Length: 403
Image 1 (cartoon, rainbow, N blue to C red):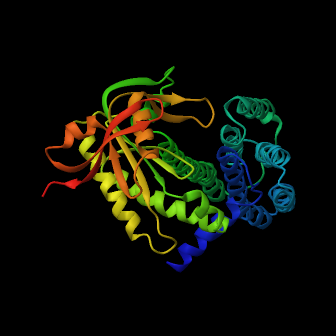
Image 2: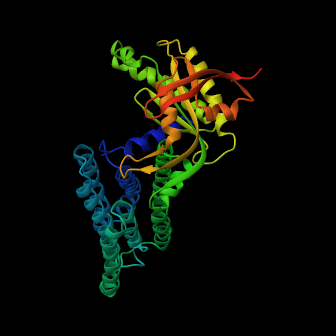
Image 3: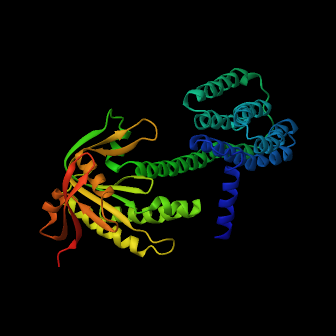
């Protein structure tokens, strides 16, 4: 277990070599995959150095040794400068040319046990490191070097290598590039999937899942009309003077504690958090997925929100004003950058006005909410209240479920 943990830490450190803060995830993944592939080949290269040295082949031995001599300093240089493009070009060039140079020095395809197969990895790896379009040049280079090797094959003098060693190197030259390609592609795909899942989570923090799925399908304008939905607005009573008297860290900590608790309630009651604006919180039921009990679910969450606020004693006493209305709404995604899912209509405006003209520590609702829930919940009638833009409007305070 300890050895596995140590290997994992080593891989993470190598993958982070040359990383640049603020890089896009794709760019970071390309850098780490190239570093890991270079490191893996460096680990395997001494096998060729030792074998050719033992066989008394100084020129073939000098080629993999030369690769180590120039690659290790290049890794150090990359770690210090973080200049990815020169490092990438240098490494791909080495990994493409040196296997063919080694093959020619050994006397051709058979004598070298087809060591030129190692040149296929940079040609394919360029798809990861450079991109699909840029990789075409590298693959074309690989094919050109294969053609040159075929042309000069008759004039090359095969090195005296025992058959058993040749066979072993055939196996190694088939297994090695395959192993490197498999391990690096595994790493690349696994990391890419991990980043994809992280991006999905971030997207779902911004948009409802159903809306996010439509957006990824590249629909045009995303807009829906819902004949029935319930909207809730809540804000913290006297938040402005409270914020003035607190350090910034405490203000943010307070809002985070309150709104995180509300987020959990929204998940519990299967409601859709729409947004927060300053110290205000907006949630809706029946959007984007219609449901028959949207009004009851929002009412239950509103009552739970008041209970949550009573339990928040670590920082400061928090009292909420809550407003609710139910009725038709229009919902859609607005913006191209930092887009958001939002609601519009009289129901939204009425819920907002009921909140702003509400009673601290209470849930003020419209006549439509009262008519829908009065047989199951207790209310206190407030009579007519003056709402901006609507005039005298009947309102009730939601007290809780009937006994």
